[in-house]
Length: 260
Image 1: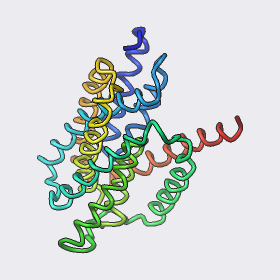
Image 2 (image 1 turned 30 degrees about the vertical axis):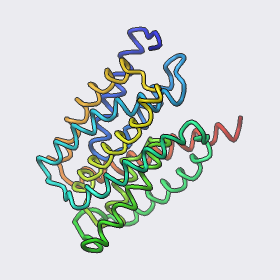
Image 3 (image 1 turned 180 degrees about the vertical axis):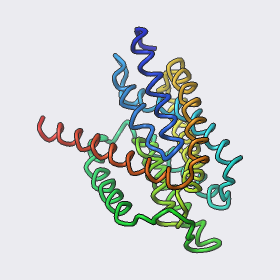
């Protein structure tokens, strides 16, 4: 483990706490936790991504359990979606060391901008459940979404929960609160899938990851309870804010790369 001073440790734990809260409400906690890890002296990008997964999985497990107890998400959707997402995450993680992340940033930026415009243009989006497709058709679409976003999570990660929520709302027709509940179960599976590759490969920094995981867990518990208490409108507001910050963050990265 890299040698860290007390201030760096405190800042990392605060970032993990905030990431857990954001991730539990609407996803996108990796936007906070992964960049913080990349500031650790001597850490490689793959180590940061792997350690981020270890820190995040404790938070997604906590928020999944909290949502399951208080919201009762539809496991007929969450189950196939999570299984497919786990497989996608294993494949994505295997490619993480081979494909430059910079190739994906401009595409993700455009997708997020479209998501934000789409969400703002439809103020009633995600306010109520309006499910599309039934039976096996619904489950196949859910599994396809899980496979695609799971692959992205294993490969890069930040914003996975956000992508899951918008897909569940805009494609499958869930309101924001149950969408967040299902997204947490699926996000747990994608974190697990990525770790299936990263742990045997030796990329995880265990002491650092477990410390971040405890802080992430606390943030996730608080965030999930707040989301359940305040409902879909609250989740929608946080969703719009997180997407806007993701756009600003990725836009800054892309601009820096173009100017360098």
